[in-house]
Amino acid sequence: MKVAGRDPRDMLAAIFPPALLIAALLALWAWLSARGSIPSYLLPSPALIVTSMAANGSVLLRHGLVTTSEALGGFALGAVLGLVASIVLASSRWLRECFFPLALASQAVPIAAITPLIVLLIGRGQPAILTVVAIGAFFPMLINVTRGLRAADIDYHELLHSLAASRLQRLRMIELPGALPYFFAALKIGASLSFITAMVGEWIGSNVGLGYLIVISGQYFKIPMLWAAVVTTSALTLILVGVVTLAERLSTPWAQAETPP
Amino acid sequence: MRLLRVLGPAAVFLAALTIWQAATAYGWVDRLVLPSPISVARLFWTDPGLLAFNAGVTATEAIVGLVAGNVLGLLLAILFVNSPISRRSVLPVATGAQSIPIAAVTPALIIAFGNGMEPKILVTIFLVFFPMLVNAMRGLRSADAEVGELMHNLSASGFQRLWMVRLPAALPFIFTALKFSACSSFVAAIVAEWVASDRGLGHLIVLASSQYRADQVWAAVLICTASSMALVGLLVLTERRAMPWLRLSERDLA
Image 1 (cartoon, chains in turn cyan, blue):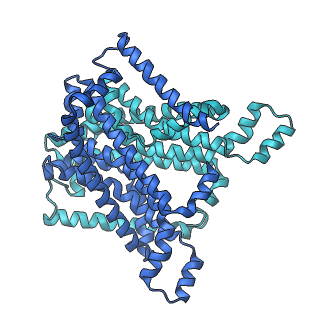
Image 2: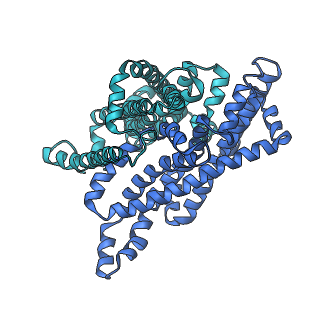
């Protein structure tokens, strides 16, 4: 892909093939369901799922709002704390040497797996889920931004040093802009994880939310409802990732040329 | 400075453990809510059979799913990358599919396949398949075009070009996907077990939580974490072995 969004024909060429594939897959799915090749207790036809979504709009909205508040609240909390912690770590060599290896090791820890521990500590309900989402967003942000803050060209630092710039000015003019691409990389990781983490957390830690709705629909064999909740969660995730990607393009226009397709 | 690099993190880690032990020993937090680290460690000594049995079930699900999903993803990537039209249509869809919460369909899979190992393996396969497909397609395409032309001049076969040019170029991308999936495969298996199962670490977590056996919950989570960390560590070592040409530049970065 070249620089997207300049030539409408380029945009069409980028959008048309995947859209066609999705349409073909949907048609295949509908056809197989109509023939009875896919049992409807496993995967109902797309039309049935859409009907179920329309019929249960208020239920989906109620549970969706809970999950959205957990996912967005935890995402924002984790990202802000990670950002602050990374500025602290980037400023002190001692702290960095002591804490950064532990932060790196945390990348191999499956965050969703600690949900039971948090639920035991805080109790079932939304605060526990929000905490897990926040932890999941915190570490990628801490690691990426700590790297990003130190990625700026040393020449700029020398220039500002010779201009007698203060520490705060160096942070604001060199280090933070240099860390922006790293910041957005972490934000995208956090965005795609936050709804999944919240939903999975609700499986064992909550009596409300889309994750709870999925499990309870499965137990009562309300399969169209289950898939309606899955589609809603996927849509919410895609919207959040889309918003973060858009924000990235708008705020770091200079980085677009280097972004791989 | 090298000493600090090892001792610093170790000291922080030990301090955290000590504070945790003190907090539980002096009764600052309820033992039902947060077990002392010593009581968690003791569980490995007093009841190793329970932990080993459940860990074995989960590890089987995770590793079978990990291998099957990655092989499938890599094979499809090799297939798709050779045709521009399938590449242009598949890559964006596969990228989007990564953000679909695949774990969410677990209840449906359990209804279809029962509460044995199969649905858990399927969830793990789905979860690791898309990252491998996307990364391998990007990697296979990243091969230097000039080397490809050279191979063309030497009248190399398609397989030779794949084996000598494209796969080596794709290796860093493939290892990125492998490291991601090594971390997520155990959690996929455990999370699938939360929904319905009668054995495995996920089952142990749910059962022990309902009985307020916090020490068993901690032990199960610890095993899961240690297993995925060990897998990631193994992959990092393999990565260095498999791509010695990258070792130098990596050292420059660190």
